[in-house]
Length: 305
Image (cartoon, rainbow, N blue to C red; front, side, top):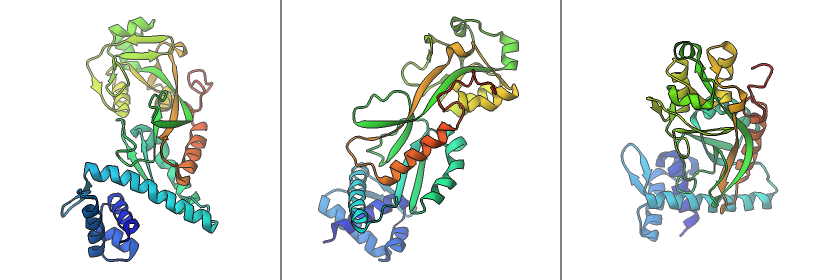
C-alpha cells in the first residue's frame, strides 16, 4: 500500500481535472491513477470524486480531504527539499482574488512572477464573493478590510482608498451633492457584496445611508454603470484613477469622505504556509506598493489626480 501515491493522485486529479494529465505527469498510465484513487476511497470508506465523461468534481468529503492531503504533501516536499539543500519555491499555488484587482493588476504582473519562479504553477480564482480557504483548497486570498476570522492570519500587502465618483453627465442632470447626507437623495449604485449593510457606505467621517434602484454584485459593473451616468458609485480609487484624469468621472464630496482600508493576503492559521505562497505575498506587496490608490496615499490629494 502506497497511500502517499494515492493521495498525490487525488490531489493532482482535482487540480488538473483529468486522470490522463495525472497519468502523463507520473508516468503510470491512466488505469493505475483510477485504481489508486478508488483504493483510497475504499480505505476511507467514502467517495472523494464524482466522475463523468467530461469532468471530475470533488465531493464535499473529497474537497475537505484534498485540502488536508495537499497540506501534508507540501510538508513532505518541503522536508525533502530542505534535506537536499534545495530552496526554490515549487508546486501549485491557488490564490483567490477580487475580479477587478486580478484582471487589471495581477494578471499583467504574473509573467514576471512565473519567470522568477519557474517551478511554481499559479491557479487564480477570481471573484468578489467570500471564499472558504480550507473547504476550497485555496492557499491564500487577497481581501480588503480588517481581519475578523481567528482561524486566519493576515499580512497587509496594500492600502485601498475608496471614494465617491459620478459621471459629469449624471452630475449635470441631478446636481452635485454638497454634504454626505445629500447622497440619500441621489441614485447611488449599490454593491451587494459590501460587508454589512449594503446601503451603508462606511465613509471616512462615518457610515451614511444611501439609496438607489440599481444593485450589482460586481465592482467592474458598478464602474461601468457610473461611466454610463446611472448614479454615484463608491469604488476603490485605483479602479477610477484614469477616469478621473480623463474627466469621464469626477470625485464627489472631496477627499474628506475617502475611506482607507487595509488590503491583506490571508491564509489559514493552522496550515504551514508553503514557500511558494510566501514569495507570492512578497511579490504582491511590492506590486501594490507602486500602484496609485493601493499604496497608502490618497489619490485625491495626489498632484496627478
